[in-house]
Length: 124
Image (cartoon, rainbow, N blue to C red; front, side, top):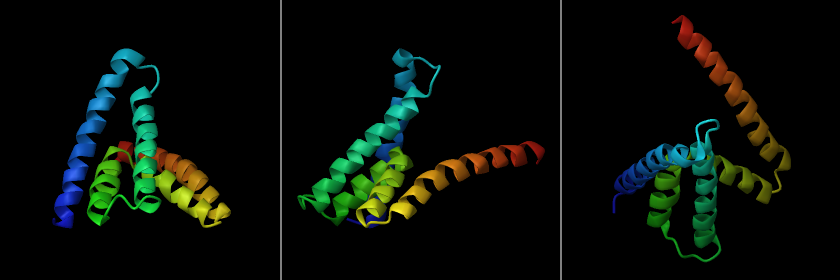
């Protein structure tokens, strides 16, 4: 199967599930905290961990399933899970400082750049 079709199919499924979960969770958990986003991010981490082990440890996923499930589905469902996977890979490779840089750099720099973007957007 064409890699673009696999990416798009996984991406569509992940996008739809993200929307459904984000709309469903506040109905019972409330709106005083982004519970939907938290559930999405945490469940995506769990799924990506399962898929990664199925591929690397058990050799149960081939390249097409990896493209559909890990890159397409999980990538569209939550990029947070990819960030966690990449940070975990850095730790597995003994790159502790780079893993910390990825965690703190992404969180702090991302927040600062988001705030800068809101400022720029307001003056455009």
